[in-house]
Length: 283
View 1 (cartoon, helix red, strand yellow):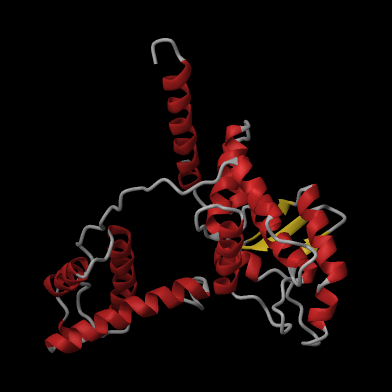
View 2 (view 1 turned 45 degrees about the vertical axis):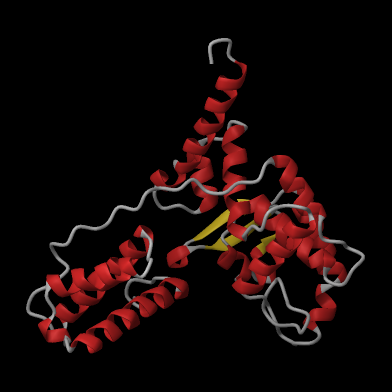
């Protein structure tokens, strides 16, 4: 998966967890790889559903098993693929949680630049909202990811695909302040560190820490707990609400399929229905 399909480390880790659960289930039932049947795979999925797994999780579990069984068949461990004829569960499409423009404004002002790492946290939040980047993409940014002359940031997305996303004036200012005021001191604690955003010990900020930073400042701003993905969803929705082209938003988000981006048009239509119902004489 990592070397031939070029899947991300996070996807590989998720597949590993899925297969570990399946392996434990097989051991508990005395099954081996060479004797796998479709009924056994269905029994595993039914057990997972009974344990509270969502439809989206079940769909990914089955995807993991499909990949493994194709690999096992290619290696001669299986004569037939037990997953070949199994239908894929179709999870219901949930609308993403969003912030209004006013809520985003409150969130971005929450980090206090006069406190330690205030500029770093503000730069992180500004960049998340300005680019719509995934949390893993922000964690992976290096100092040379900022192309200042072009006023863009280079994001490395899924399957090592790179894209250039414009960086707005306010986000550029916050990043510049962080680079000038805080990063030199952090970088001195870990010489040679090329990551853009560093911890208080000079190490790369991981995904989990970025999630905590977003949550911490949301609560400080009087908002419900959010994740960095909330800013990604808000970025896309606010662009479309203000007339942005769907294909342009797709490119900025790094979606391979425009169908993935179209969920934000559903969000916008939902908002329009509310406006119509509230203000139209016969709404």
